[in-house]
Image (cartoon, rainbow, N blue to C red):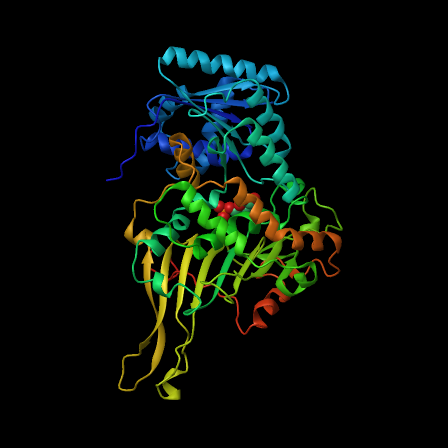
Length: 509
Ligand code: BG6
């Protein structure tokens, strides 16, 4: 049985309460925590946004989001009637101090009425242009005075480059303790991502071979079939390298590559991750073309439907130079990983939606079997399936039944759905609960964010300075540009996507 300490009474203020993130992710997550009896006994969500909307309409709007996106399906009337008592709304201008003094009065009153100290969580579910303005006003209007009880949550993107990330960190540090700041990377809340640590450090058999002596290379693919949807304005300032590699993929790399910790303390885990980021070999501007590939999708076909190219999307320039695909080869300069390549790639409008980490082991030192028996020989592979299929498979050679010694690769599989049919919480459920409980383990520390930007700056600067003459260079519905194949092929490898093949995920052949 899981033991979690009782969470103190909590007020969560969501700036951007009428926005998409609140609608699709935060409210369904809060609702499921509530259904699972995970919410504090006393809690209140105070939504703040510019929108002129009555409390009834606001609640109705949130319910629609829950009906559409909650993993537990549509809200049942009784549950909803009870839950909605915890939802309140305040129209407010994020740039106006009056919004914050109003909030402070409300929270102080709630605390008085409840007769106990109240956790205050300020969640910035807003575009980054508002981060500074909101954080400064929360700080200067005294909403975050109690360092034990008050927390501020910053959504990604955290900065646009190293300078802006540093600026934001400095500003936040003037107003809050690092322990009060929760920088979200929602990948860290995913069940399968958290399981990487369990897999590596709760088992004795993998860690001894988890190094350059046994591992040939590592691949991390996060592919999405969706395009940029209605986020053209944001995406034109971001691109795949900033949007995905700087945060989600580098965090996955850290979890695969980090050293074991002595305990499960937040800072110990975060220290080990920063060590990995700091050990990533610096790519010089002259080397960028050898180590990194960018792509942009043109029109094409996804699941039998014709889709537009990136430059035809809403709010996108017809001559945009923005990358919708990025692939990078990294090396980690330390004893464990010297000379083991880590290939990372991520893109929009790719052939399938899949996030997978493949650890390819080295060939056996000597093949003692006759040549004809080893036609299908493959080095061992360990595949960590992050999503949509969740599980782990280990691929090894086995004898094909029969009178001859013939070998074929087979899989040993752990499938989450087989083993845990009850399902897993969404990433935002885990992260929100951690915020309420004051656990920063799954959040980005300031030095982590800056180290990740540092690694990527030469690539970002080089790409910014040189427009790509061949954009668009991959058709929607493919696996990205040919150059990405070349990036890995020149080392004698190829990109692998090995999906889980079990009864439950419907992929069994
Ligand atoms: C976000 C990116 O951080 O992650 C999006 O901004 C991307 O562009 C999304 O689509 C992917 O998240 P998930 O959980 O769907 O893999």
